[in-house]
Length: 111
Image (tube, rainbow, N blue to C red):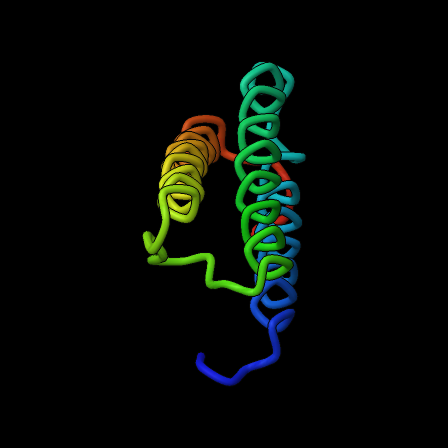
């Protein structure tokens, strides 16, 4: 949003990533032992992808430029492309998490 404080977008992303990670962790923590190796790998993939995403957003804010849809220079284009790659990784990890939850049916309360 034009004219918005430069650190508003990084703050909003940090809050949404926190909510996403907490929700995913809550879902995966209740899976049985048979799924825990997959949970460990999946958790690492999500952590890495969210770390890269947040790092690029903070870097671009510190540089005083936009992080998304910014290909105004080769560096900005590379950073935006890097974010796209890691968001795809995160999306695949989320699909894997949904599969694990469907396959192993968490044994906690339904509510």
